[in-house]
Image (tube, rainbow, N blue to C red; front, side):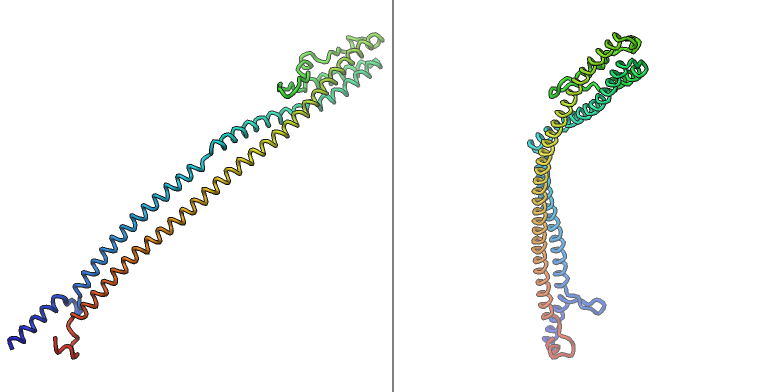
Length: 295
């Protein structure tokens, strides 16, 4: 009887070591310890995963920064930029010149018409028509633009014309009522016409040269600009492709690391299940079963 009591006490002591009762629910000490260990392992795993994630992200950022630095303008691109800028300035210059010569050409054509009117008025002795045409001719001279000199162009003589005038006096200075007066007026008109004709020829020539230069410069400008844009596009495309590859690589690495940590947590869960199964064996049999006889 004493032996039976001692055995029962020992069994009770062993059972109470692994089982406690709280509100009618059995709490397994090993399960608690295993769960606690698993929680701690999960927290550590999460912390380490975060550290690895930060490390990989920093490496990715450095590589992207290096690629972006490489995509900055190269020496060749800078040289092309300088050339394009210079060509742009030259284009602007010859565009202005072409426009100025075109305007002067139109004014010179109008001036030629007034000189013809002057000649007719002088021959007919019409002082009023003569003075009217002279006023219009002098106005045209004032409208002419003195174009800035350029090595590619010739001096058109507009500057001298603007300074000296046509060299034709008023009708009263000639006395168009006399043959000598008419002859003197016609001589001055002919000299002015010859000068205007020469200026017109040089003006038209300079206009053509300016237009030709503008076309040539425009072609060079477009060619270099297209080359620069293609180089920049190729470089940006390569950098973008490499950055996308790095991003995919980062995502793959993070996924593999996450799987590795998941496998670790699965192993911890398996250990918990093993401990629960072991405890179930050690736990007291349910009352009313045949195994309760041996409890």
